Length: 385
Image (cartoon, rainbow, N blue to C red):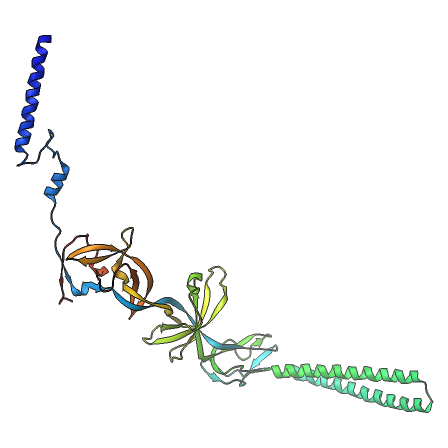
């Protein structure tokens, strides 16, 4: 058995050498495979099966160039319209409402009589107080004469000074009683005057809250008057957005149902945040407009800042990769160029974003083209729209 081992090794060596020779002979004409029939070199197989990317035809309207332009930062705002001057006409005395003739939409002037409260009871009380004041005045006259007589008697030595002091005290008490009665007359006179309700401001009646014949309580609302000459909107903003707002900033807002825009200007910022929502209310004065009414809802954009820099349309900047990038064309092929974005603003009604890392004039693909693989060949029809 030991004498046959050298021959067995020799046969195996010759078989291995023949297989290697056969592989070297066929290497130049075929891809080497293993015993399972799969390629022995995967990289060679991938390169053999790779196909060139198809050429994408683009129109000139699919491209945009980086431009150095002024950007205006806009903040969306919305809110209700309210009159700068408005007032409720309230009953100052209780009683039956009379002579309420104005209705919603009627114009009134400051000081105009709006309605009355039945004053029969107040007139009777006023007469009673006046009569009490007259009685007190008569007591003052009697006390004054007594004092004058006692003073003459003291000077003649007929009575003591104590009697004079007593008469002086009686005179002072009578005068105090008369003054108190007179004050009562003044109070009731005011109540009688308050029975007549007058318009505190000029404007239009927006609400009629009571009817003739009703008994109104003190401070009961009768009508509301608004002055449409000065209107403002109340915009609720988050704390972050409110930090960008400054007095004097201008905005353009639109009215529901109207194609006209209305200019507005920031005039006040509420120092308190709304409980619950933590929103900050900003007040903007609105320019006069025929269709503006209290209670309407308006919305628009507030200009909060501006900057000049290289910019592209916001849709041209892509964020479907870890790094923000822009698709540009270099030597007829698409390249993905990473960029750093900055100020976002408006330019001629279009949303634009400042891009750092691209020189002015660089042509980029708009977002409407979609995502293309880096290296994709493209052709641009400069005449195409």
